[in-house]
Image 1 (cartoon, rainbow over the protein chains, first blue to last red):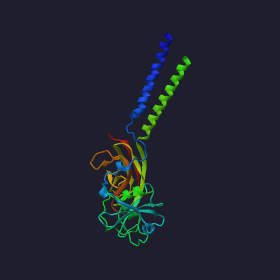
Image 2: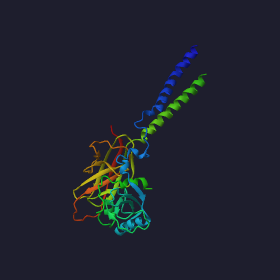
Image 3: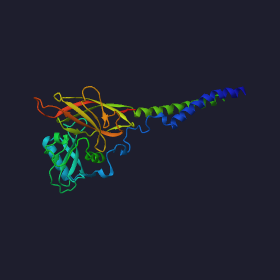
Length: 168
Length: 145
């Protein structure tokens, strides 16, 4: 009997430790945030501005359009280039917005994007239009003329949402 | 009998340690992050950058510092979400850490993937209005209550 009491004394603290560990595990470890991963979660948390009616119509621009944009970039500095262009059809019918990443030795660090505008459908392989520079990236890194086609607010650019969805 | 009890103790301690390590690992994964930022751009135009970062907390404190040549002007940095909307801004960013404020004027920045917008206001000096190289630092993913 005495032996049994001694055994209980030893086991009880162990049970307490086990109980604490179990509570920690199932209680979410007292986590500050259950989604602490550095990987992106669902984009719904960040799409605060996107209502269904304002949802951009995104598409990958044709090779002809990409070539036109790239030509304006290489005309500024032949070491830079744009390999992919994503387009957004302006819902107000003012044309199309074009977004591309400018890569090259003169765009270090964060990696600049450029935004251009055009009047012709950029998804067509027959694209033969011209492009104009909308944002600072296009202004800095291309020879495209200043945009007079689309209304631009640098703090709200739905075309950049298209880029986020189709960048890879 | 004694040997058996010791064995149970060993197992319990091992499991407890594993749980604590698991929990600690989870906390570390969500800790604040600090890193360098840099770019090149013309003065007086906003450039939208392409490097994606992530804020994991319900509300996140962010700050930045900036070093570059702008002829005595000012630099604003913005935080852009994946919809292309700027959700926070740090005005007059200097060599000291400057906080970002959300569009309601508070210090909490919404969670999710974000990118940087940068506007360098400056006067064209004797060196002209050429491309300005800048660098700085960024703090993000700091839980804000």
